Structure formats: structure tokens, C-alpha cells
Length: 423
Image (cartoon, rainbow, N blue to C red):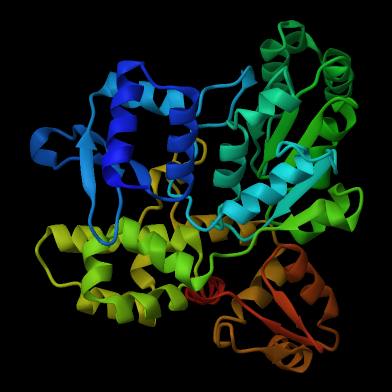
């Protein structure tokens, strides 16, 4: 994909002369990281204006095309049009390294031309690994309408969701306000099921924290609808999935794709410090959210005209600044912009006090690829039987089994455990 071809296609999109082939071309460019939509706050001196631009990436060279508010919105909408129903928010489009994952989920849903496989698919993965971005892309894919002509219904839950409100919103999207006046969740679920009875829709429920919260959507789904759920919790995924094969574990990026992502976020830094950046993506274990936050830190340092070598070293050796820095805007939840620490805090807040304390005491353990066994946890927790706590930490995605009775922890989780010890 040559930059000139991308620019010409972009111009046709703005002028409303683009063909369907142009739209597909730009979709592919976005999903491969060849084009990035960028919204960034300007300096305070210009009163916090928002700069909106389309960035055409290359081998450490970038072409930035600034757009007005209207053109910026039109281009995004023309590439990924809003589908009938309730579409997910516009996806984060630095989407490198997810082509295989996207294809796999689309195949499971029957969106790739294959025979539909699972009517229920559960995507499980680390906080910040990209589950929301993945389903955001799927929820705006034009292939959805081919298989589900009535469109998509999307929602994102939290730890204490208002399920009646969510179901009422879905009811409004289906043409009725009656569900606003239903007194109980059970009755609302029954009425939603009746509305969906003759519909062919893709239902997306993002960020599920409990089996009970998923129940209304499982119960109201008709035979013509597919249900796509994301969760960070092993126990929830196991409880929701009708069979183990219905769970798709979304991995972190490969090292090459993580470095490619950094090259898009801070091209000049990667060009000048490729070895250090490769060490950095390894230290961050190729977790997309952490890479985005690191990229923003490096970009800020670079704009100030300061060297980034010391910052690269700081991030590699502890990533302390990452946990204090805000996450990208596209990971905003409930109107707030969470930090990486806040994302991890959600997981540990759900634990009972004893289990949370046990997790904190794992902070001095070395992060993956180092491993430790049950005996080590037994000793540090001073308990006769560590298995109940191990099960809870595993089910909450806070501990990874690696086989032969050994476990490991993500570096950001180790760091979070240490922060809990310091409280």
C-alpha cells in the first residue's frame, strides 16, 4: 500500500466519490496499521483545541493529513459505517497484529463466508490486551449485515452494571420504550427475548464480570442471533461458554507486531533506538495497552526536545511511569480515562481481603518468564493449603499456570501487587 494510493483514496472518501473497493482498501489499511486516526490535545496555550488528523504510516516516516471536524467524522463513518441497532464505539484503529484473531472470530460468527460455527463466542484475555478494540472492529464490519441483516446490539458492562437500563436501551433500538417500565430483570429479559425472536442480529456484550450479568443476554438470544462476549476472568468464560471450544483466548502481540506498533506510535524513537525499543516491548510483554501508554510517554518526552534514552531505560526497568500515566482515549470507560493501574485495580478490587493480601504478597516474586510453584506460595502466605487462593487468583486472571505445578505472573501484575504492598 503506497502512501500516494492511500492519500488518493482518502481524498475520494472526503469528496464522496469513493467506490466500495475504496472503502475496503481503507479498511484494510487501517486494520494493518498503514493508516491511523489520531486525536490529540493541543498545547494549553491554544486553549486545549483538539487536533484531528489521518496519519499514513511507513518505514519510520509518516504523512499527517489534518482534517476539519466534519471531514474527520465523515471519513471514519464512510470506512466503518454505523450499522442498524446499537454499534460499538468507533474502534481503536492501531490494530496491527490482530488480522488472524479478527479472521478467527469472524469465522466463528460466520462473517467470513464460512458456515457459522458457534452461536456463542467468548473472548477472554488480559486487561488491556485489546478485547474491546477487537469486538469494536467486528461490530462495525459490513459483513455483519450480510449474515445479520437486522444489525448489531452492543453494550459494555462493568463490575456493577444496571442490567435493566441496558436491556431498556436495547428495547429502544428495537423500536419500543416498553422495557423502560418493566419492574423486574426477569420480565425485561422475557420481553427482550420476544423482541429478538424473529431477528437476525449480532449481540455484543463487552467486559462481563460475572456469570449472573451474562445470564439475561444468554436467555434472550434467539436462534437467529449470535452472541459475542468478552471477559478477563477465566471462571466467567468457563461458566458462560456452552463448550470449551467456544472460548477464544486473545493473546498479547508477537514481538514483531509489538515493535511495529511502537513504530507507528513513535516512529523516530524506534528508528533511532531500535534495539532499546525491542527490549522495551519485551519488558512490557507485548501488552497493547502498555505499549500505547509507553508510546505516549516517549512522544511527550520527544516533543519537549529531551532525549528518550533515560526514559526508555526507566520504562524497561520498572515501568513505574506507565502505571501513573493515562491510557489512550480509546480505552476510556464510563467517561473516564483509566490508567493501566486502574485497569488492574478492577481485578483485585473484586477479591476478598484475604485473597487480595495473598496476591499482594506475590509482588516480590520475579515476573514471567520466571516461574514459581505451590510450595513457594504456601511459604509466603503461611498457609497449610494454598490451593483455594490459587484457584481464585487463576479464575480472576491474576495467575497463569504453565504446567507441572508451576505458575507465573505478568510483569504489570507483579508491579501492581507491589503497589498493593505499599498501601
